[in-house]
Image 1 (cartoon, rainbow, N blue to C red):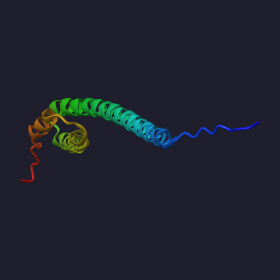
Image 2: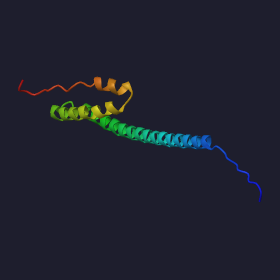
Image 3: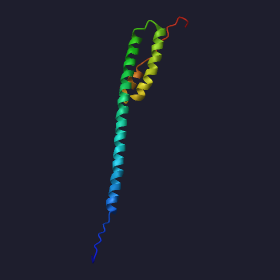
Image 4: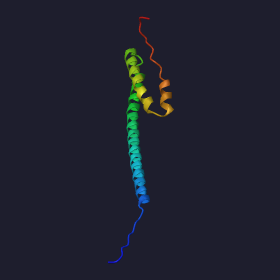
Length: 113
């Protein structure tokens, strides 16, 4: 054998490109995870809001049927106040805030005034 041929290739660009591709792939996976968590949290908040809406509706209905009983009405009003705080923090709409502002505290009709 008289001669030899050496082939040298510079793979720097390919290695940098592979490293950048891995970095971008990692960022994509992280973004997909965050999107999934956001979707899950939105679903949980929506379900929670639905439950609270039913509780508030039944409490308001109960208040309408207990006008002659101020003690029960006062207790229902306390429940309603506590129900509307989490609903307002979960809800993005202004309708629930308007609904809360329409609620007036029950009048105390005790004879000791």
